[in-house]
Structures are given as structure tokens and as C-alpha cells.
Length: 212
Image 1 (spheres, rainbow, N blue to C red):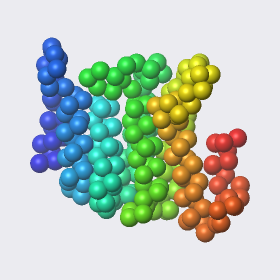
Image 2: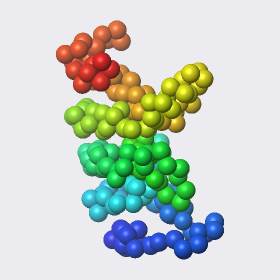
Image 3: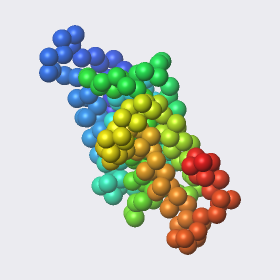
């Protein structure tokens, strides 16, 4: 079944005239549900789903997130490796990050945002927290989100000048990545056995370098 699903994702295309009919985004929503419901089977074949359609990759990550919310156990190493691959995909042009989404995602920025949202959930999970052994890879994903092109500096200045900080934060890739990074810091402290008041620079050089 997974081979058939992969083949379908590779070959299917929406009708030339979309007109509220079948769409890439609609198929992606269905894919998200399949990933969540069949998470163990899906992760056994995860390498096969390193597809080039950004919308499907984002939906797979959202499927991971839903599975975690439903208190299903994840194979974290496979999941994190997939997120690291997905977050590292580059767009043909930086301007792609600012195009409106229609039938499908215009850029990989949407995937990086989904990855950072999911990481935040995994960093604070009380039932299936991300293993500390994956620290380096987790930081790699966050750093890619923190360096994303979205939002543009001029847009960031516009929104913050209107004091609309919250909307800027939750709707931008760097804003979502920054929030996840804060939870990363608390995750470090818990796993290093540090008190609430301490996080020495030597224990988290990557964090302090990012905030510098």
C-alpha cells in the first residue's frame, strides 16, 4: 500500500481547470490523516516519501504532529532525520517565500514553519518527548527556521511599527522558529539537570550564538 501511495503522489495531477475540484492541497490534507493513522507503517517507508512536492512534505510533517497529539509513540530518529532533510530544501528564488499559496505551497518556507511547530510540540511533550541524543539534529532544524527568508525585514518593521507583534510572530517562519527555540532552551535545562535560573553559555553555545 505504501508503494502505491508513493506512486500516486508522484503521478497524480489536478485537472487543468481547478474550479474547486480535486487539488494538491486537498490531497495533502488526506495524506496528513493517513500519516497520523498509520504512523508506524509510514515511518518504515519514510525514505520513499522524500518527494519534491512541498505541499505533501508539509502535510507529512503535520501528520507527525497529529500523531504525537494523539499520544502515539514516534520513532524519533527517523522523524527528525526527515525534518532535517525537509527543512534543508532550497527554493529556486528567495522571493518564492512571499508568494501567496493557492492550490499548493509556493515555497519550502511553509515546510520549515511546520517543522518548527512540530518540534515545539515534541520538545514539551509529556508522553513522548524528543530524545536528548538528537540535540544536534534538532538544533539543525531550528537554525534553518531561524535563518529563513520569511518575513522580509521591511515587512517585519511594518508590522512591529503597528504593534502587531503577535500576528507577526505566529504567521512568520522566523517567529515560529524563535518560539520553538525558547522551548529548546527549557528542554536543554531539563535534560542537563539545570535549575530554572541557570543555563551557562558553555552548556548551550549554539543557543547563545543564535541570540547574539
